[in-house]
Image 1: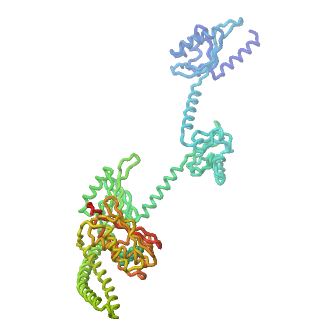
Image 2: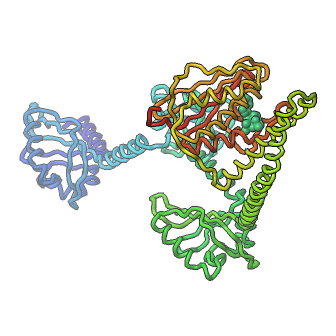
Image 3: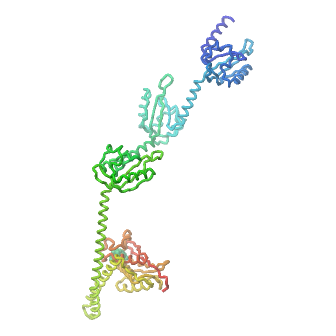
Length: 610
Ligand code: ADP
């Protein structure tokens, strides 16, 4: 070896010794021939321990075969590059290495052994694994995780950010973070970046961002500085959580709290052991205890001793998940006053659905109960008064009827005897008025009978057409309006009290004449439909407002505003409807204001052919 060669060799061995990688050579039989500092550091064997030892001292048993394969490949002149495998240290610890194995040749280029350069990649591998775990976390996070440079340029954008803001990763990366910041909030971003430059973190900052589709999103933001290996701040990582739902829940919670505190009903919650856990202002007002006085106390402070059983019953129901509705009971206020209350108690469940307590809504019904008591007293009194009135009316009508009958009989005689007398007209006028009075008294008597349930019907088969003809015949002379019986069968057998049904017809015809003063015709009809005979009386009169139709069959009811124009008492239709309903029939009217009305009634058809 000349001086030059010696110099080169010295330099090479200096390089080999200062390398971090293990540089080893061995013969093909496995004998180690050289072992640098790097190999000492990685495999923990000193050079003197390793040299002349077999290479298998650093090969775990399960890799022997692989080692043989590498040796035979190199023996064939092959070079193996960056081959990742496992070796072991002197203390038996396995380490991940990346190796390069090359043939060693003598001056005649014959392969005489092999060199191995091995790099410990355990730390690198660990880092890689850690990196993989971190990116899996970032990728699977529900929070948007974004990193950006100090100028605001986006450098990473996870799937949650895509979902939250609508920009894909490729759209976002390289863009400025301002794409998701509402213009009016750009200053906020400046402030955050200023803090980041100072190394300060921004924690759970509530703000608003905009998505690609311009939808505003309420978020909670945590921004932290990103540092390089030397600790220089090079960017910021942002974690954004969508708190729209949370905010909604908070708003709902606030609304509920406002309702509870402004309610007029006492709203109280308690545990299943009866310990009071909440107490609203109305409870304070109703029972006289402040919230501070009762929270943590047992609910029995407002329960009268003789009603303690109730509480046991209530809690038992609540434990079974049952609600108690409008339970009327008595509670006591702080000053000893007894309160009548209506109680609604419902179970309170935790998120898992387990019953953990009860909420009570108590309404003070002391006043309501007093009003109810008075109402009952009043109704009772009214009933009594009504009874007196009915009795009086019955008596008065009856007492009036006798003298009136005598007056009428006398007038009839005078009417007969005074045919040539010029005063006959007075007698006839008086007779007319007596007729009206007679009708009114009969009506009043009928009402009394109806009220007393004594309206008796003499039921029999009769011909409706016949009855209608008779009634029209009686009434026609009293009016100019032509009363027509139209399209009616000659024979319509009905079953009922002929006189009373006659009264109903007279009433309806009388009204048709009275309430249609300017018309020229009244149409009367009757048909048989299934098992009923239906009679109709149609006028072209003033009509009845729709909203009043339901009331006209009530006692003494008259359509408003009519009293001054048409005389009447509001009794006729009431009696008619009572008579019809006693027959098991129906009475109703169809009407249009100013156009006219049609009244209908139905009674059973006779089963016989008359
Ligand atoms: P009244 O003695 O007042 O006529 P009714 O009981 O016979 O008493 O009728 C009750 C009310 O129904 C009447 O006051 C009137 O307002 C209304 N009414 C009854 N029949 C007719 C009709 N044919 N046309 C218009 N309104 C009618």
